[in-house]
Amino acid sequence: MNCNVDKKEAKVVIVGGGFGGLYTAKALKQSSVQVTLIDKRNFHLFQPLLYQVATGGLSPSDIASPLRLILRQHKNVQVLLNSVVDLKPKDKQIILDDDKSISYDILILATGSTHHYFGNDQWENHAPGLSTVEDALEIRNRVFGAFEAAEKENDPIKRQAWLTFVIVGGGPTGVELAGAVAEIVNSSMKGNFNNFTPKDAKIILIEGLERVLPPYPTELSSKAEQELCNLGVTIHTQSMVTSISENNIVLRKGEKYEQITSHTILWAAGVKASSIGKKLAEKTGAQIDRAGRVIVEPDLSIIGFPDIFVIGDLSSFSHQNNKPLPGIAPVAMQQAKYVAKLIQKQLKGESLPSFVYKDYGSMAVIGKNKAVADFKFIKLSGFLAWFIWIWVHIYYLIEFDNKLVVLIQWIWNYFTQGRGSSVIIENNKKDK
Image (cartoon, rainbow, N blue to C red; front, side, top):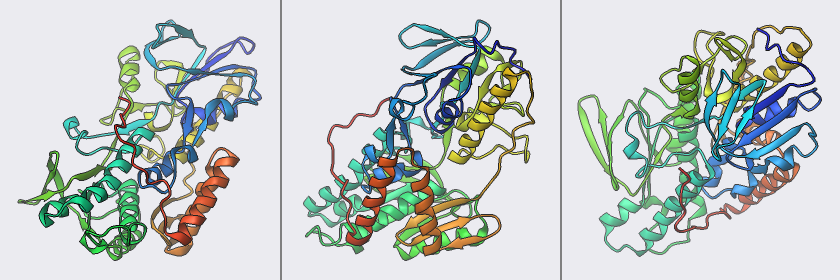
């Protein structure tokens, strides 16, 4: 497909400053196009480490970099702080939240995803998910606030409810959250309170399938489960959530139901695409899957509109193995570089083969010295996997300052068992 735009006049509009949008803008630095990057936040968030903010290991500023700072050397890029509220594909325009419109020759949508409650959105107030900085701070407040409430509670039954932490979802995010909360209980908070001890706390991880980390090889899932058990995490597999209220969660396993009383329920069970995917489908006739992701062509455009590309978590690309690619950062980054290269080729009247994702493997951290890694040609667990996980995440942090700060913070936490970012910020409001 060819966008048929004039090289000298080409206006590329990118919506979303996550991995997909940011890496596209960076890859177009030397191109003869004018790039406008639009995001409702003025920063790029390194989401793979968001759980560390939620559990007090890092501060938000450690994993967030201002978009203008990152792109300051990209003279052909303009950054706008706005939200996109409507699309006019036939007119090649997008409408911003201040009622202004922006014209484009090429539109790239990379607005990501958010947590998914599978039709039970009323659960969100009782079981926050983890997609934004506000989510992370809300979870941090609840986790560390629970310890403070337990310290003041003299009734052992009520105290136990404060010391019971339930994480729904046994994928990478759920496993990382469960492991981090267990380390808080066993190490970071040890000796800090007088009214309870670490053994009084319960960390419960719930997974609907038969094992945690379902996409991983069975042996790595088993290893992760064993490491979590060693940390004191109780794992419920093949268990479905049927109800969540302010202080209770109800599970169904087969024909049996179980009610767990807890003030701290965290959601890590699934994600859905941002709402702009549905808007795009309405305006273009593009199809979306059950998670709201836009089904794309082999070149990541949408059918009938070769000037519109959808990448990252918002896209559903199933042309490689007959199943959608996972919503992870490496997919978004590779798609970003592909689209940038494709645009440059098309402006020269050339073409490019279909997008092909190169899977270099996946990793999940469980705790200090504990991780699993599947690199296809080799499977690792324990200290070596954990060490590689650390350096991979340091490498992909955007700014040098962030790399240095995070590395120093991790070294400090490793030897002191501390959680320096465990302050509780009251009245934190989530941005809806």
